[in-house]
Length: 390
Image (cartoon, rainbow, N blue to C red; front, side, top):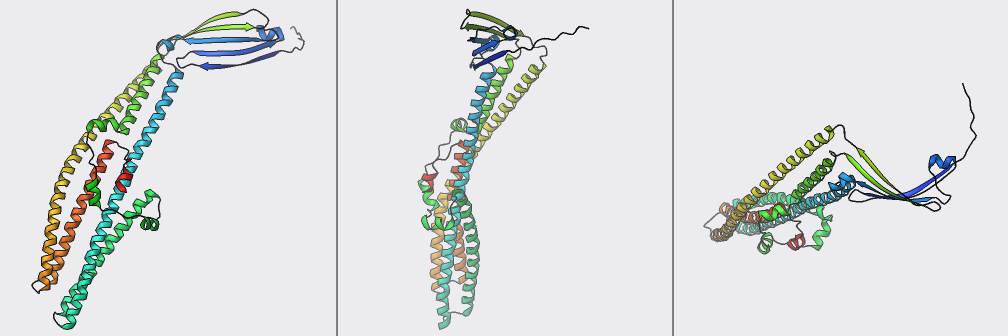
C-alpha cells in the first residue's frame, strides 16, 4: 500500500458567450474563455488575456430536409396563434348571431304587446258606450257583462304578452350591459316590417361560405400543424450528422481552426413509425370532419333558401289577408252599431284580426331570423349590427 500526499493547488476557468440558433437549423456561437492554473485547467491552454471562439454548427440532414426542431417550434407557434384567432372569430360569429336574434325577438314581442294593448283599449271604450246604452235601457244588461268579460280576457292576454316582452328585453340588454330604465328612456324601437323592408338581402354562395367559415379555417390550420409534424418526424428516420466549424483567436498565441464531425444512428425506429401512423390517422380524421362540415353548410344553405322563398310568399299573402280581415272587422262593428250583430261576433272578428296581424308580424320575424342564419352559415362577422339596429 502506497500513500502519497499532493500539494494544494488553485485553478481558474472562465467561459461566457452566446449561441444563436437559425431557422434553417444551423447554430452560430461566440464565446470567450480563459484558463489559469492546474496545467491550464485540464489542458485548456489560454493566455492571460484569454481567447475568443467563433463557431458554426451545421446539421446536414436537417438542412437538406429543410426541417429542424427550431423551425418546427417557430412554425407551430405561428399556427397556434392563427388557430386562437380563428377560434375567437368563430365565437364572435355565434355571439353576434345571438345578439341580433334576441334583438328581433324583443321587437316581435314589443309589437305583439302593442297590438294586444290596442285590442284591450278598444274593448274598454266599448264598455263605456254599452254602459250608457244600458242606463238608458236601449240594450240589455247582459251585453255589459259580456263586454266586461271581454276586458278581463284581454287583460289576461296583455299581462301574458307583457311578461314575454319584458323577458325578451332583459335577454337583449344582458348583451349590451345596459340598465332597462336607461334603455327605455334613451331609445325608441323600430318596427320589424320597416327593418325587413330596408334589409339588404344577403347573397347566398356556397363557395363564399366554404372560404369564410372560421371553423373550417381552424380545421385547415390543424392540417397544416400535422403536416408540419409529419415533416419534422420524417427527419427522425435519418441519422444525426452535424459538422462543426470553429475558429479560435488567442490574444497572445496564434489563431487556430477546428472542424468536427458528429454522427449518431437511431437504433430503434418504432417511435418514428408509430408517430408517423398517428399523424396520418389524425390527418385522415380532420379531413373527414372538414368534409362533413362542408356538406352540412351546403345543405343548410339550401334549406334556408327554400325557407326564405316560402316566408316571402306568406308575407305577401298575409298583407292581403290583414287588409281583408280589417275590412270585415269594420263591417261587423257597423252591423253591431245598428243592431244587426252581437258582441260575440264583434269579439271574434277582433280576435281573428289580431291573430292575422300577429301572423304577419311572425313572418317578418322569420324573414329576419333566416337572414341572420345565412350570416352565421356564411361565416360573416356580422359587423352590420349597428346599421341593422339603428
